[in-house]
Length: 298
Image 1: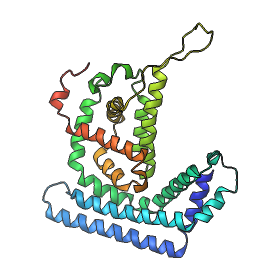
Image 2 (image 1 turned 45 degrees about the horizontal axis):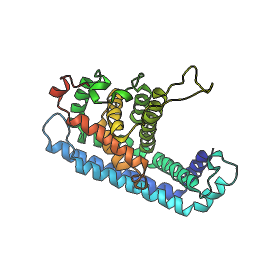
Image 3 (image 1 turned 45 degrees about the vertical axis):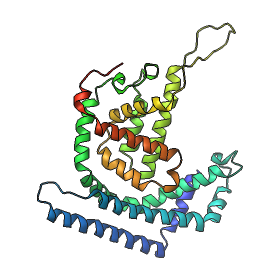
Image 4 (image 1 turned 90 degrees about the vertical axis):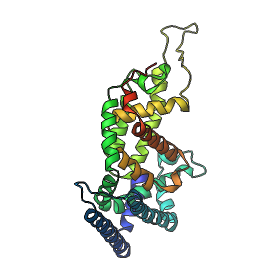
């Protein structure tokens, strides 16, 4: 598998003494910075809960992402010939019909990013998570309350068009969000899961809206579909799936993903669906539960 081969190559780079020393120094410095800020905030705050400024928390995580970005670009540029050589050793199926090397370069970027996050983000995960959780604590307490209130609401409440309401209640989408976004470790894997969940909505809608008549005039299978899923139809479905996924601490999680996302992906489908994820969270957070208790179904 080409991706694993690339990741093994990057893993060996991090074993070099110079790289290992650089990484160790950065991780130690990042941990000390967050701990010092947390200690300072705890002394200022007299309540039971530790308060962390959102801007400071985001700035700290941004610096970690910038280091990851730098390592990623350094490896992609400095080891380009080695990565190409690895991709040419075997006939990798992923690179068939890839005349302009677009798929190859995307796979290089994905593999390198994932391994760099393993080397940099994982040792700092606990530190980063606590920082963001404390910063968005009040938001997530409110989100938990609202998502619980919305969890039993039918699809009609979310203004999902009758033609696009799922007989399965979008369970496969909610599962991807819960497992892939809520429970995976690496930010890049969580982001891919958001894209996968969004694509599953389109796929499932197409499958559930299609039917095959038992007989046809032409004595063959005729698949009939209703109108395609539009952008205005997508977000209400995504909000419904977001609620049903019951992701823990979604506000802190969204802040993490927005900050840690590879900047090169923000203008593509990853950025688009990350914006949809944020829009779903914001919609729920701003929802007035007194209205949610009214019958708004159509």
